[in-house]
Image (cartoon, rainbow, N blue to C red):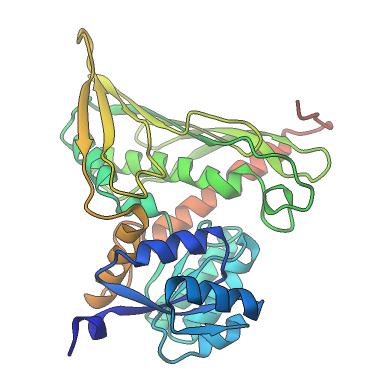
Length: 349
């Protein structure tokens, strides 16, 4: 049997920007190969397949789900379609890697998790940074007390996108807004760090106090912030935006110093080193820690997924279903809290 025969056979569902990123990453993977792609536009599927030398292409998502050669489905549709196609793939016996957010809310995520466990397949929410060695290095530093006991996390992720009334980012119907698009990165980092402090995979907050500015025309949150209170006494301050640029970094404050992670999310799609900085009281300059990867960011994610499947596991340790359920609950609370505070029409500057 050739090495190629042992690789996990992927089908890519949808052909948008993030699907292109994933397909490029698969070219560096030693654990998987893309054997099919689907779009609701057959011409787009054919062009995508030609661009990445993918043998099969389909003009409907159903055909890809029904393809017996596909073992795992990468779902790259707009957010509101995630739950539907994840469930269809699961019920067809396929493993599923689904772009974040896994679904639009905790209720849908719970249904996906229940079905994944019932059908005995691997399902992972595609927080790719969780599989990168930089993240593991940060966790190791926290656990060995590199900055003492962490008491606060500050995580930001925001960009300034031009307004487009019909565009995905700006449409409630398409799951737009900062909280659902990038806010989950910030909450997942905060929960990850809170867990590491206790020697756990993650920890959920007991309080979520959120605020947001909602666009007067479309109703999506253009910028949002939240304070998270964890049961171990740690605090999280998180913010996100689609109409305002931010630092896009994570800062951890501990009893013996603080840590700055300049690129916590889109770590390195290629092979350049990433950096972690540790600041100690009295030090004239920070300690700089370099993390040099051996493969692109999204390849780490695909390989971690394939390794779990091959090992007979039913979850990817870097991002479990319980972790996704906890993050979905926090996003629900953030949105609900923010909306409850809006009692007048706010104008976006």
